[in-house]
Amino acid sequence: MKILNAKICSNGQIFEGEVTVDGERIASVTPKETSSSSDETIIDAKGMYVIPGLLDVHFHGCVGYDTCDASKEAFDKIAEYEGSEGVLAICPATMTYPEDKLSEIMDIAADYESPVGADFVGLHLEGPFINPNRVGAQNSDYVQKPDADMLLRLQERAKGRIRICDVAPETENAIDFVEKIKDHVASVSIAHTCTDYDTAMQAFEHGANHLTHGFNAMPGIHHRKPGPLSAAADAEADVELICDNVHIHPSVVRLAFKLFTDEHVILISDTMRACGLEDGCYDLGGQQVEVKGNLATLASDSATIAGSVTNLMNCLRCAVKTMKIPFASAVKAATHNPARSIGVLDDYGDVEAGKYANLLILDEELNIVHMIKRGKLVR
Image (tube, rainbow, N blue to C red):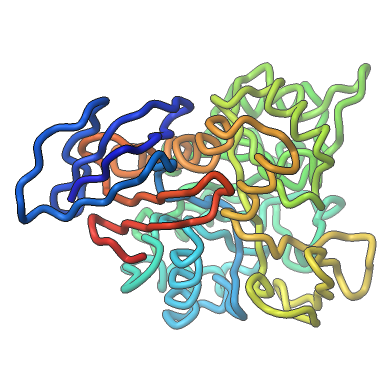
């Protein structure tokens, strides 16, 4: 297969060229048109964008299913929907639950391979090692002190598929926890925290390298109390942003891209099971969530945002079209950066020879015109 006359957007760069696909992987990316065999499938991009399939490293569910349902059916339906929306690799997140419940999820994840849709590339353990005073929509009844032995047990059950583990660094034994687990996951992330700058920096110095849904469920930036966001900037850590036009004001998103740069911003969706469905009342981690339009809040507390209902492709569109983030930077934040952060950049995240041919062809309005999954034209 060859894609001709493309504007290729990869790793923060845009250039004109063609992409050759051989089997499941990209064979070559060249700036000029080359000869083609008569039996080769040719796609004329007609000047449209070719970008890598998106990779979401933090979301909980969609179309009525949640990762914490701990069933193959849930994983299948989630992968199918995400793939249909251009998110061709997924690392879904768990909620705060007891170890026995989390173990059920690990058992499903351990050997799971998605039959259709997005590739399953790992799990993001968002709870339970968070601050009970910053739970957001997590269930405070299940919050635990950081426990490295528990994390390692869960990782063993998951056969190494936990890619990101979250922790509030100000909690008891948290820094020791970071030190003990840093070599067992791709990223240790500061999350749901009341931490000050110094404690956050201590966590980064001991192995943390990631900040979960930046600006949400954490102290903001104060000029005398800089907090975890300033620490993340100084530590050059990766910072997740939810660009759904609900969680963060567009001006703050623009500020974040300037502060952290497109080397370290990671776009996420943080969607819950209502994504892709109509307004109504839905479950999230054992709590009821009311969904109206693109806003999801706890039914018991309408001031508390409870995840998102905007998938990552729509977050990318929002970042570019509403928030005025440069297209190449937004694409990098939804492809290359998340792949690097969870250790799968050898296979995902770029339009580059040797990587999986998971590709999207987008028009100027960022609509998906064609989709290629592992070398097969699926749209």
